[in-house]
Length: 169
Image (tube, rainbow, N blue to C red; front, side, top):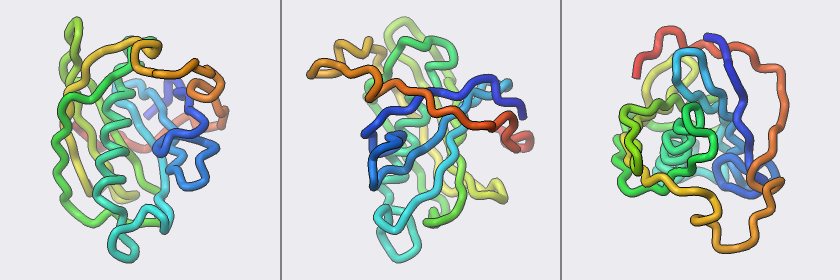
């Protein structure tokens, strides 16, 4: 599937922060079918049981990925989570390439709803979620002066396609 656009990352976010030593450093891509794909690999510091990702980290990835899916349609809209429902289907391994795949299911004036899954390289669903977000501008969410280079920086790469052709959300 063709990548239309790579999304920006932040500096310090636990999910997408490229300078967060313990972060997941998820790279997000807007796809031609309307999905958002996040590529990542958990590290030992993200574990619950040995070799398995902690459920809180899993839910954070799903929350971030579904919330960012709105940027494909409204690039200046930020989502504040009002509801997140996560289902853990299989253990999520550490130190293995994984993908988050998300989409917007309903987009209203003040709210949006979406869904997402985390899959392994065989495209087996490991966790899934649905979420509802309240739309807000960034200056209403942040409580400090916003340094846009800390929250909105593009880290270029050469990813042009991602194999998700057989995945349906």
